[in-house]
Length: 466
Image (cartoon, rainbow, N blue to C red; front, side, top):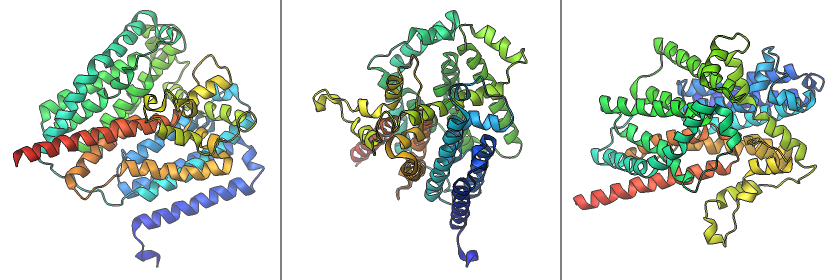
């Protein structure tokens, strides 16, 4: 009977059995789960199994779901992962601010939620990858037109925000940027269209080598400029998306090309480590480069993973506040995230941000002098508690998996979905440390709105031809 099942069904069954085993381990072996190293390795094995399951279906190391879940793992569990390798983590945020028992509890919740979320991801995957369809010139030119339009609208606000941050970093060090607590105006929303607009243009030139390479390196330079400001989020996301684009539309990372990919990742880690050293104090770039490359005190890989993995601290802070200080909200923040799409002008000035912006809530409730960020699994716990939150991770997995694998009977629209899914992934890579309302906003403005614009303009052009 098993032989008659298709590959996806077999993999789903294997993963489900593995998931059941992990749940049993955490339920039955009480003494072992009091050992952080044991729990940490269960988390590591969980990631490895999920990676193998997705890769065996998609046969692509840079498949969107693999990249997304890797970022979730590093952001939510990075410091514990390093601890499992025998690295001293006492001076890092999660281990500095929490007891071993609290970290074990956070790791167990992460592992079970990650497991269940992975099941949701696998449910949405398709075994066969469809070949690229050559879309019509009119449709391609429409995508390019909308890309240029959004770029024109957003380029000035984008660089108006970026250039002062770069100048401050170069002249006064990264510490000056964060101590100045720079605020952006309402134009900040417009800046978020800039990178997606360049990705649309890049896609439209995918078959024109010179123009494609020109925009590819332009976007890469912008990623470097973002990294210069000390912010690893957008810069890191841009580089990863460019690697996926290269893998999808230029040349697959197979065989010898995998070595190139490995070298790029190492260089990226080194660059992020330089930024980490600079942000740790008020020193400039020169001092940070020397500290990272010449000094043997800090390992770039350890620094990078630890910096990403500090997001677990937000879960620990949430766990201490809920339900002792604040009751469970039973989906309130998720509902508020959808309602935030409605401009406050239409709601008499009321904003649902007070219910959805949980990073601000966490900062206020603990009276912190810094922004703690948030955690994708902290929000599930905040709303539904331990068991309900873990179960809700299945919904999140299916949601994100579906967004990465949208399909339409119209093959041209399928190609549009692919580039829009890449834009969605760009906005989702660091979503592990933000509340859910960021995801909903990105879907509405960066996905649905752009899709509607392209379809309306294309249909208008077709009617004029008739």
